[in-house]
Length: 394
Image (cartoon, rainbow, N blue to C red; front, side, top):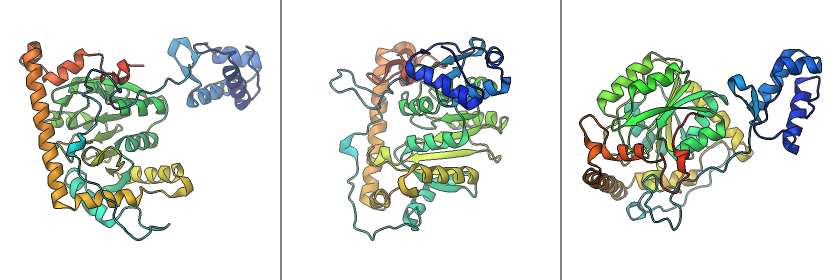
């Protein structure tokens, strides 16, 4: 195909048209910047700007010595949850037991209009009771439509397409889908029974990670939780990289039987702590508490206004009311606490079964059985997208 144009916009449009009509197939290598600039009689910066725009639009990507390559069509993203009719049990689906969920009831309330405070004062009180002890003083409080929505908005506020991010390997499917949609480059960090491995994270940071996404408790799919020693080691490591943003997805906070151990250095960096209500109250209640630094909060508010129709910029007060009714009810909180104990008992029973069947996973210094089996499998919950749950560098 003959590429035409005298401006960056015209060159971009010419290549975009070629991709759209199939004249430039996926995998086609575009001419080197210098060569195309000479052919068109333009400055090299003009061609470079066009290529940069192609990359930002997801139409092409820079592939090192291979040059700039036309991307293929976006692959369908695997979804969370088990595949219907599958004989295997998906231990990484993230679904709670419906029998252990609290009863959600919508309570009558006065209409909420434009200009109303975005976070109900009762929700603020509940959220801060959870977050205050684990966030630096003066933190900002926000709400998101669940943990995955919070992760997507945080990464969009912090990172550009192509930026590198360190994530656990294996990783939660929903997080991988967010990263794929945002165009971030994954740097996999190995996980053992105590969460992210320190040396593996150091390698990712040295490789240029601009952010770290980690799960402090109930890591999906291994079930690993950070202990105090590992969290301290990770915190000390991150202190040497103050430019790196830290996103902590504490999705299991309301149910966890494990203590929370922070990896966050208090040094003025960009950071966020997410605590979802969806595991405890049900995945259809898309709501999460978010503590973060003030600059990040400002960016998030802007993105929420831009994303939602009419510039509403808030999480529905109907959802907030439903969550408040549960969390302010002593019997309902007791039900949530019971669910957390039951889930812990099931995890322990699974570990015992795996120890009995997979004796080689329990050697001294080795990972817990759930983590070990996840490591030996194709890094995926059965039926949820195969190797998509692995963080193989792309």
